[in-house]
Length: 114
Length: 110
Image (cartoon, rainbow over all chains, first blue to last red):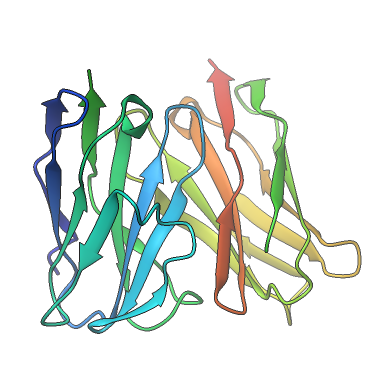
């Protein structure tokens, strides 16, 4: 079974620039999550999709972050414009159904904002 | 919303000793408690989980205990090995709310 795929693995941008991350979940997984993991901290949930609908985006900074999962499969997370404090690893995870099922994480995208 | 506190933030043990990591949560609606292991530069991986209808669960050298009344749960690793060295995260999930602890960096000295 193929795991969760993410790209790019690394990204360096300057503040105020835009950046987009891509995630392809495990085939058949209905639920997809985007997390932000700042160095030395636990993952923080940014947004959760169930198929192509948003279940929870309460911790997503909506003035600059957006995410979509139009066809209920892969997803993109965008930051526009980026700030220095957005430097983090962005993890994508998927589970077969909801939050109370095992989540499988992708390798993450390490973002550095200069 | 949920608040999860994890202790200690760092833990160093001698190979063969036991390690215990504790988490407390605030939301009584939480009913699923997974533990993840994250090695340096790698993705978090689930190592064990427990649901609120169970008080203890064991898988070889790893066990998790849950006290719903006190709202705390713990990870126990026995006979630690150097390859257990990693950051461990707890999480509390329920009622569409999910929060991770800040992590415990475990170092097992050979």
